[in-house]
Length: 129
Ligand code: THU
Image (tube, rainbow, N blue to C red):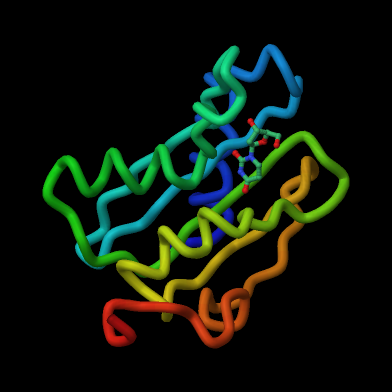
């Protein structure tokens, strides 16, 4: 699947962002190994710790629909900077794939990519339990 297509899906999801506290809209689009796309946005809460990032929204939607194998995730926001996943999202994504390609876009749709294992070196995984 084309990276630009995935970024565009993430951008559409970003429009559903519920972010009245930070006013920082984020969208994500996750690609399964069989070609399905799951999207997500950030969902904030008056109790700030209840906030869910766009990446985890997309991932949890996919997991709850029975998908566990993923190849790529695209992330976009309104920022001029590339939108990198936060530490919690890196850890949560790592549960399912350290090889996932992470596509980090800026508001203009320009992007850079890294493998999750590059973003989360020495990851703590189920192997370490
Ligand atoms: N946010 C995401 O959705 N993904 C990230 O990886 C970075 C942070 C959200 C959480 C919060 O709603 C807002 O961006 C500001 O931190």
